[in-house]
Length: 230
Image (cartoon, rainbow, N blue to C red; front, top):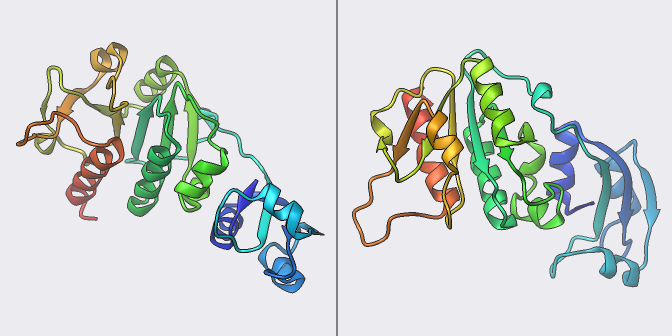
């Protein structure tokens, strides 16, 4: 289920198959709905039905039902020198959405979720990503499967962690690279830290030793983009 004009438009742009458009005609017309997704079935709904289906307090009068995509590692199409974001076991939809927005802004090759705890098509992730769920290549798998995939593809992977780390800006991210972040509460598991090409850290100069995961990921990603000349 996708709610909102921008989100539905991005799903169409991301080649998601829109099966049905549900519209509340007092807010969003049938003509607009037909234009939004020309090949979808249109269903007019009343206010009561729309309010039950919608998640937002402010709404635009239109929702879509779309077919989900495969989230298999084998389906990812990567460039010769890919830049990938990997997040291990993120739980909060807001953090996942923010990671996807950052990935879209940097035009990453892919986002991979290790040991997922949430359904990626959760309406709150659609909302918090402002539709960037549909603009990124995404895969989910176990940590072991992802590490094996990276090694098979000869992709260096750098794990953001406090333990045995070197400053992130000293590393070369111009080669095939994956940047790996964990949860704010527990960080990355030992499996990632042991297998990493290099463990990296963002130097902290205040009293705390960690940042919001989406902020940390953005710092690492845009250092890689800087090295690659944007």
